[in-house]
Image 1 (cartoon, one colour):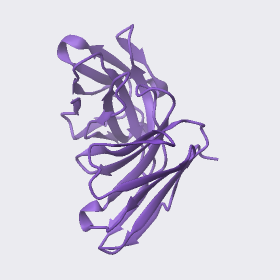
Image 2 (image 1 turned 180 degrees about the horizontal axis):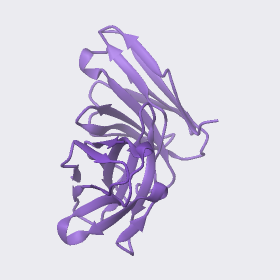
Image 3 (image 1 turned 120 degrees about the vertical axis):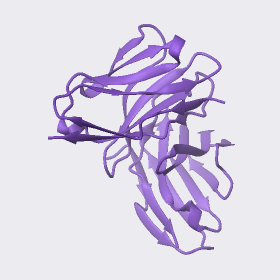
Length: 113
Length: 113
């Protein structure tokens, strides 16, 4: 069965600094990979997704992620973090015919002024 | 108006009580999901439904049941609530394939005393 590991439970960065959130997955076939963001008291919102093609994908709010098959990773990046980016971020993996999407445990991002 | 709504938003109940959480969507999607979120565990799938006649167990279905009353409505029931079912519950919908983006409701915070 597929699984997702987000090694960092909590990350703190200064506003304006760059950000990288790590995600490693396990999946037996071509994975479909997602990053979602959850703001306090809200549901999850999709940031970006990867199905195929260019391994560097762009998302909303200035985020991007890179798929590295050899490392089974799909790390999320942002060049300059804003205070409004403080939230919890979830990586998820699914498949084209598999409707059992698996989420990582999440990484909570704190942004210092 | 929100595309995916959940009622109630908050609920406190006692051990042994039956409780129903409701989800409605206006996106016209066939597929609906129920997840629970626990700190440090991310989201785990309880049940999912491909259409009104198709319901499937997810990763953690024990102690839960669901009903798909219509394309737009998907309810989650706890027949006899227990304290370890205290969690944040999310409903989500998606279009045709498992690889599609899932759209989440705002969540229901359930506390079982």
